[in-house]
Image (cartoon, rainbow, N blue to C red; front, side, top):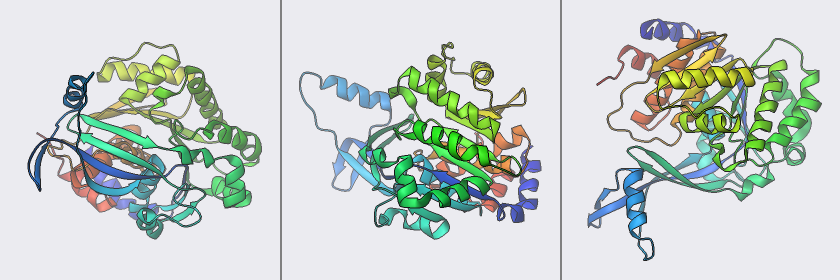
Length: 368
């Protein structure tokens, strides 16, 4: 399958340039951070390797106090939307991004995205301290600026007609980070009532990612999922989630929390699909991913990355690769493969891949 997918990518290179994507609606400045375990000198330290080890350090300080040293490794654009948008732009897709990237002036960290895509901002960006470990990451977000992402502000600061034009014509529409964009459900309701009934032409894809909904109530999550399912009347809907998010969605829907294995997650995808009947449901744990589409589930292992350069944004790169493959007409298993290839390349290299990078990776698949 790897060689077949690589060949199809080569043949589809020219087609990618004719695809368009309209993505939103968040925006963060991300600091990628390591947590100091032992410092040898001013320039050298060993990092706390795992989230569990940090947890032990914090528990030991209970009732006392402690100092935790954080060392910023890099500062980059962040937010589920900007990362996914940049990944799609790296593929050659014509991307329009709308979110909170600085207002009235664009924040400098987003200038590289603005060089690759058509970028519009209606509010100041948020900030994330992304503490990265060998077994995952902990994100500390400061996100009050997202309260300005409302349908009224979109119309006033971006323009209703401009939004409608992008929404009505883009090959892919993507709305991500529902959890942190407090008014996202209201925006979706407005789109369903005001813009969707007037849509014409062929069906297109729309992508949704709730993005770690643990802090939202079950009622809020169920409401969001119902709204997402209503978009299936107008689009082919893709709903993406990581393993943790899958468990949270299961709880909200009254389903058993899945065990951490592929069979359990496939069963969950099937159960979620019965309650949220959309085109595709994708779940991406760390080492593999799966998608349920047209009654079929495909599970695909990811590439082995022994020394990750970055993990924050890996899921957004998976989403970009999956959506690109859907737009190019790849089959379900190939879509998952392109998702894990995109994510794996990003984690291994610290940047998003171009199409030829993916071709090379598919033909030289990293394994243990």
